[in-house]
Length: 353
Image 1: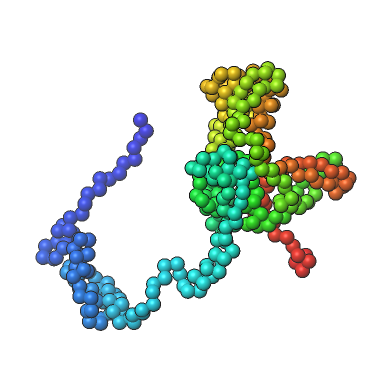
Image 2 (image 1 turned 60 degrees about the horizontal axis):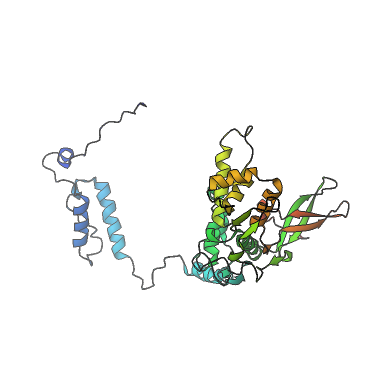
């Protein structure tokens, strides 16, 4: 049993003990409030607050109370309405800012809403999106939100209408919203540092986010198509598409494993993610059994499962083709999500250089 720190017993101080005989007790909070309520509203200037028991206080204190009471009574009364947010100038500027920050753009999600029922997302695939403000940037600058993986959900809740739970959105729709939100909040130009695969040298490049290809969900694809056959073993399976809450669970799984000695552990994050999205393999539905089954499948089948669940036939193509500035050869990279994606570096103009 841990040692307890000794603390002296606290006892309420009785007024009659502190005041001594022959002195009036200091009023209780209830008596003070009652006395204030009973004071005349239009008392004479300089009279101050009359409170029974205050004559026991130091004279200097009483004089200050009297002076403040007189000042409050003699101050001129203004008919101007009290402003909660601040001055008229502040409200004028806030109204001006709203013209650019509170304008919502209508956006069609790549899924076209086929995988939503109206409660977890729009059945017509349409949401409204506004640019981020300093409040949203503050969320991104808060380490605990980033570590918990809740930052983007908080930002989506602020910037998207109607107010759906963003954790229910498909991962492909969330990626689209993330890139779109960055474009309307900062700029379509995304400056990155990349490594030339031919020379291993670094160079700067600007990616046009508007140039990323967006494919909408085909007419013949929907929730009814969430089944397939493994190419090698020819076993039937059913699956679903990843949603925001799946990414959160995967992040939590990765953090749990990181607490152990990883020198003897293999990274099963990809297998765990696949087992979350696969709902049935050959009649198996238990998640633990599905994970065991996936581990034993031929690698061709595992790769097929991963591609089917992670790459539906719609969404944003985040593969970017760049040209090396050293060899002039083309190469392809995945859109890098660096720190300056939401904290872009300020470009220098010719006058600043």
